[in-house]
Length: 113
Image (tube, rainbow, N blue to C red; front, top):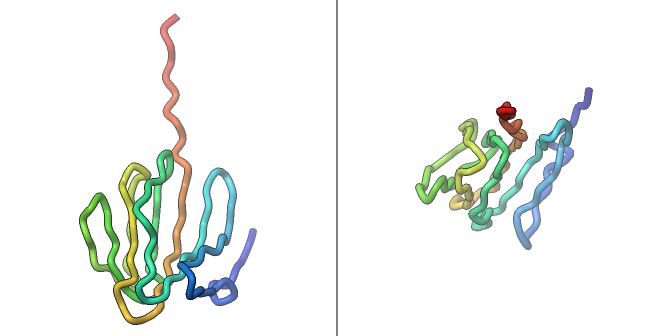
């Protein structure tokens, strides 16, 4: 068992958003992302993984497959790794995102012999 305080990993940088890994186990990773106003996470995917995201603090714009969604504290998102994903802190306050990436087990197929 592990316990980590989100306050202890809270870190912002004027250069770019920050990422602080909380746990890494069983092919999955749990981490925090911290954004100052105007900072953004570029468009990317997580093939082979499922993504769960909780907005801990703040608000901004989440872009999923090119569609913008306004999100705020206590909103929760779940999507597959093939979804194009980006985030932009469009507010004038700090944003903190709690993210869990879980590896999706590959389907096993029986081969005809």
